[in-house]
Image (tube, rainbow, N blue to C red):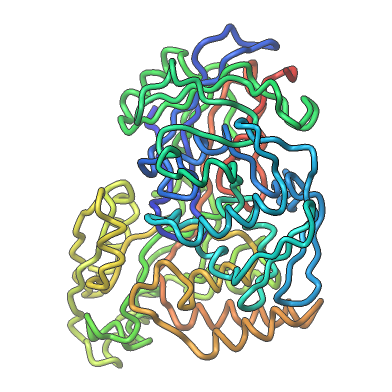
Length: 508
């Protein structure tokens, strides 16, 4: 078995933390006491508002304001209800029975303290920032009511609060934030066991006996262990030897007695064209060249050969089958047509093609090599330059015309287009902007019903025409697990299960 790591780098609108899950100690079946997860590290701090070690490390000790149900809908958690009093004002009612592990109370003041800290801290959790950037200020209305004043419309903020923009840390602990690098002070389901923890390697948690949520609301293991692993061979050996109970896998993997489940098709995976103005690489400034690159790739073949058939073909637009306004016609917008690709290149003045350097993450090399191979067939010489540890810095440098990327789409088109095709995108280091994209977004967010669907469908088609991306498919992640030990829910809209979607078989 070859394990497939699809954890997003700390770039993108909503980071998919596709951790490998492993359960070690325990005998299986009802009554399993320990669940050990192996997660690919995504940062170096336990502070959830910074470049955190892993989403699962954070989720063990910190609650979010909202949760996501199996059907992808946002449901109450620390926030019990919410309402937009107008397009730029979100009011949330909060639980009044939640206490952090240091004794501090969760209330509106705690929410305000967290948001203000999250917006100012460096290095920030870049997965949270796209949502947090909309929050201009936070008002404490009462102990149990908080008001978010937004810079502009953001209808999906409650969803953002179910993800990395919703962590809640003790306000007392926030007064000494440096201590949060290697400890945790939350109101979450587990507490850190420092005696059984090795920094940057293994994090052990025991059940929070004072947790406010009932066993019915969140069944938990007695012990949770998160192992940070980058060695795929070690993960493979652990799976084959029965030391783990949950892991991400490639298509075709079979493990005796285990089940395979498939996450939502929401990984926007391929090439991102930063230089749509042609400042660094002149040919990319011509939309015909970018369209030629899209006609040059065989989406169906890449979906089958690189992604194992797990996902949906995509027309290089951040718009999937769960998105409002989706129509099947968009999937076939760029048919595989080498002759048309070459014709467009000739019309743009590049009959012999051109060369382009592409920033690449070695973890995503299989996709990058496949796309590069197709582009070379029409005369576009792609030079892949591998950067792993400094990928974020290289992206933000503004020196690259293109990059291999792996980002998330949620099926919420306002956020997906905003975070991927406007200046709000973290994958837009050159600050590209398109007036029509901006206008259609503004119209759509204010519309309702059929008119909103029409506007989003128009936006999806126009985005495909502009070809800021070369994305063959929205891919989905496969998870293998021991059904005698862990119950796994694959929520819609999310690439991998959240911690609360992995629960003991037979409850507690």
